[in-house]
Image 1 (cartoon, helix red, strand yellow):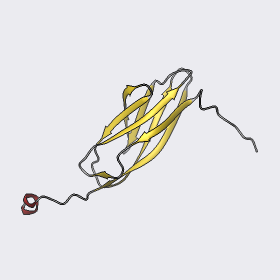
Image 2 (cartoon, rainbow, N blue to C red):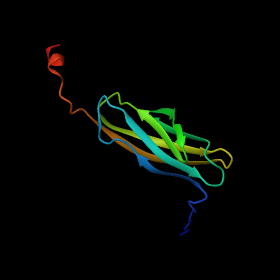
Image 3 (tube, helix red, strand yellow):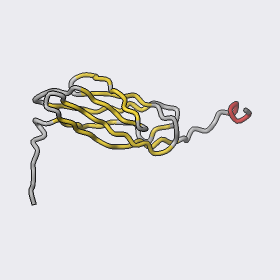
Length: 112
């Protein structure tokens, strides 16, 4: 058996994921992640939701953000991809958000 250790301090790292979970249907979730590559820097951070790649917004330091509003109730998986073009390195992180609908309709909506 071969064992390989990777020094995360020099590679492309994805960490400190924050999100709203569970998320109430009709509301936004700010998905925030720290991405770092100490040697070459980070070139792009994407988030794939529902088969579509979306570009995140660089905030500051190592932080990237994507604001998402669901179109349906249920468990929604997503994958965050980060790339360092200089070194040709990719890294990814998979997670999901549980979208629920616990808000009762207003009396006006019930009459329609």
